[in-house]
Length: 67
View 1 (spheres, rainbow, N blue to C red):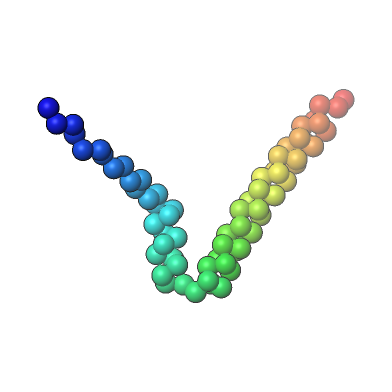
View 2 (cartoon, rainbow, N blue to C red):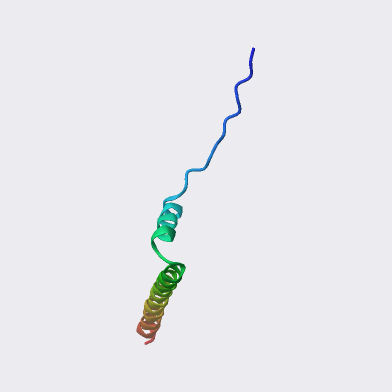
């Protein structure tokens, strides 16, 4: 009886990996860096806004509890 040949498993690239590959073909490295920096800033602004809303809720709740 003959052994089956070994199976090669290659990972299918994720959607993000595929997008980055296309991006690297279409944009210069400076543009990629600028876009990533801008997106990082957007995410940080969203995090700060979420923190601000949560802080406001805590303050309002603590003020409404006092007699």
